Length: 161
Image 1 (cartoon, helix red, strand yellow):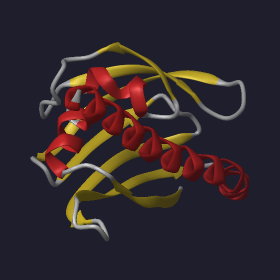
Image 2 (cartoon, helix red, strand yellow):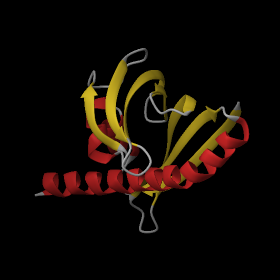
Image 3 (tube, one colour):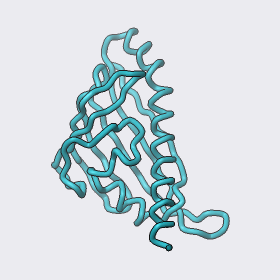
Image 4 (cartoon, one colour):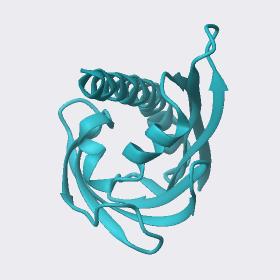
């Protein structure tokens, strides 16, 4: 079984408290996670040991149903969930980490790490499959963080009016 780690980092133009308010809500994932079509079952605010379910896009036109379990929460810093339903990917762990930063003009912002750890069996075929899916996964992670940034800016502009 081959194990893989894929990670992307971005700066979100919002304080970590605002970022956390959105990512802590399992019912809001379809608003910003690139591959999430809809959240089909959730518990609202992430709670250790609770599950939530999604309908997801995978490669190309393929879709799947996934179930995630919240494994670890360090408020404002780290969130870890494990998931099933993405064959041939197995042992999937999704990690979000956050660090307060400042923009060049002194505004509060958040550095976000989005990391996915997983394994794929199938020997050399699994390596080939990963070489095809990993660029799409990275693009989805970058798009998700850009979507989160846009969502937070949009919400901030609505509350500023």
